[in-house]
Length: 435
Ligand SMILES: Cc1cc2nc3c(=O)[nH]c(=O)nc-3n(C[C@H](O)[C@H](O)[C@H](O)COP(=O)(O)OP(=O)(O)OC[C@H]3O[C@@H](n4cnc5c(N)ncnc54)[C@H](O)[C@@H]3O)c2cc1C
Image 1 (cartoon, helix red, strand yellow):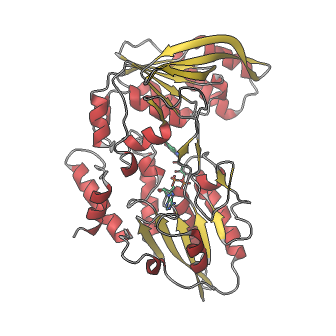
Image 2 (cartoon, rainbow, N blue to C red):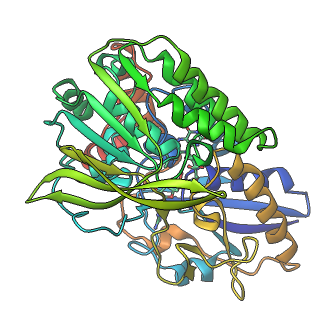
Image 3 (cartoon, rainbow, N blue to C red):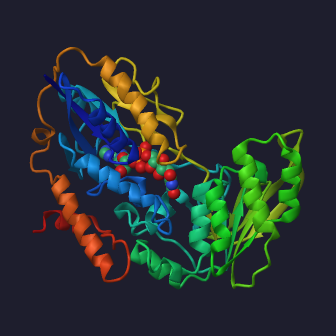
């Protein structure tokens, strides 16, 4: 029997699914001892700090993660950051293979003048702020204006727009960070405009998310009927299934009875931002108006200016680089998950870029682990232990995390919430050590 020592860096879905694939593919001849390294004291990656709090069902996948973590031959090393507390060279040296599953956390920039004005934010900062990520708890989020603009045409843009436009009372039963609920309750925002560069047929939303919008109890949802009808006419009968499904969900929105709430979420297609206007703070966004011509997006030459006091861009993510790991085009430079010439492998958003839902990371990780197992030599050659590299460092073990988890869930029970997340790093570390 041979036991190979595998380090997985990043405790998000991709990291857990990589661990699960190792557990599933272990044989009496080839076993795996898995050490999962996570920079935060809490695991689950974007399932904790990305997925919208009003979508609690999605987060139940965390039960699968906890099963993997307690299935044996698995250790969690939370509060350990690769590149800060430990180097890639050190891991490569003591493990038979190092799987990098660190995701894609940097928001892509619009690259337009005025983007850095006050009250111009990235979804990559706003989302973890409302989801109680300790690094973002002090983010300044100005909600003292009537209109907010959200730029992007994917589910993240939709999450951001919905969180700004819904009645904050709808968040009481969720695990939204308390500091964010308090701020949403005093928010003056009543109109949220989601702006997409291309047409309704090109949007990367998914149909279930679109179909959910009319269920918002206190928010008018507005899409331009002529715009959606034109898109349906453009794609015709041969459109792909997902596009058809999206357009039919949009058509439902355009044909339902008008509502008269004091909060509105409006979609505008075929406008591309060219400048954020303002002196110190965001006052308006200027857009070039586009049209679809022979299937291509072309500018009409017209300009539209939307006055707003907050703009949030949600146009994608790129990976934050880690010393000792090669990057190319915002993701790890890899060949089907292999980092050539090394014992490093990439999975999840760090490997593919920011696309795909949680489940996509499962098949992806499983494919990479099959290659990794093929690459393993006949006998394990690495020795050592990550603990020896971190003398005096406060490591959050699986047991420590379970204590944090139990406290958060207990705090939530009395308030009718799934949990109340601890948001302060020192508190999280304290809870991990509690009796
Ligand atoms: C806002 C948002 C909402 C989403 N909503 C949904 C949804 O509703 N449904 C759905 O199916 N999918 C959703 N997704 C997509 C889903 O979250 C991703 O597919 C998935 O999280 C990617 O998994 P990952 O493990 O690659 O990355 P992540 O989930 O980002 O996990 C990466 C982990 O690595 C850790 N890490 C980073 N750097 C280091 C380091 N140097 N050292 C140690 N640890 C490190 C991070 O702290 C994190 O825990 C959403 C994504 C976003 C951004």
